[in-house]
Structure formats: structure tokens, C-alpha cells
Image 1: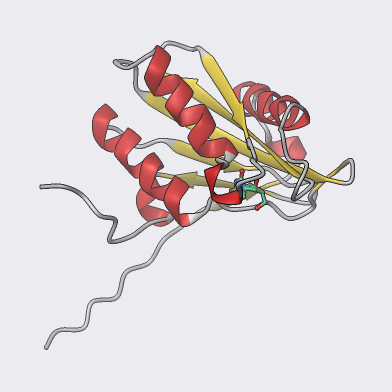
Image 2 (image 1 turned 60 degrees about the horizontal axis):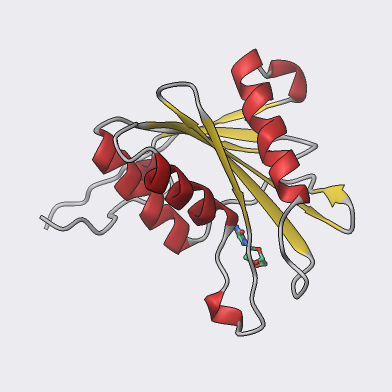
Length: 156
Ligand code: THU
């Protein structure tokens, strides 16, 4: 039996650390969260996907009275990107969440189902995406979905 230890790294950013492209993508995610349909949870999430051609595609959580029919912001944005730009790689995604009119201090991280969809976006693109998880106290930057979802399922 062989023990294998793996490690991961990510960056913690203050708002002063944002470069122009991070600022633009985070702003797009924050704006998208304002258009979320979240009457049940009152937890509004926005996601902004930056494509390799420079386009930004946004999405937000879309809830439904039949609860499991709703969809998270990340998948709404990624599926919209896939539907409209099927051949363009996803370069980055930013995620921002607010409740009761305040953006969260601590960033949220995507649910397992969204991580799986993010993983397949990377596989389609053949390149890693940058993941920017916005919080008012700190923002996390992660390079590649592998950090969020090791041992992801892949059809071989
Ligand atoms: N939600 C997202 O949109 N993204 C996440 O990363 C976590 C959760 C949504 C689902 C539901 O509409 C609400 O937030 C509360 O869970």
C-alpha cells in the first residue's frame, strides 16, 4: 500500500489586489446577483464567466416552487456560455453572493454539482479556468477546478 499526499494552493485577495480583469468580472457577478430569482432562500448568487474571446456571460440562481427544479448561478452562467459560445473556452468564473442586501464577507464556494459542470467546461476547453470567489472581507482565487474537485468523475 502506498500513501499519496497531495496539496493545493489558492490566493487570498483584498479588493486592492484586484487587477482590472478581476474587478470587471467580480462587478459583473455582483450585478448578476441583483437579478437572481431567489424568493425562497433569499440568497442571491451571481456568476460571471469570462470567455477566451473576451465576452462575459452572466447567470444567477433561478429558484422554483418545486425546489429541486431550481438551478445555481454557476450552472446557469456556464450553460448559457455553452449554449451561446459552444466552441469558446471558459477562461475564468467569478461568483458573488448577497443576502438581505449585503454581499457576504466570506466567499461562498460552488456546490458539488456546479464543480462537476466546471470540471467538464475545463475538459472541453483543454485548459484550466481561474475561479474567483468574492467576499467583502476576502476574495479567493483558485487556478483550476482540480483544486475544488479532486478525483472528479470523467467519462473515459
Ligand atoms: N446557490 C448558488 O446559486 N450557488 C452556490 O454556489 C451555492 C448555492 C443557490 C442555490 C439556491 O438558490 C440558493 O443559493 C440557496 O442555496
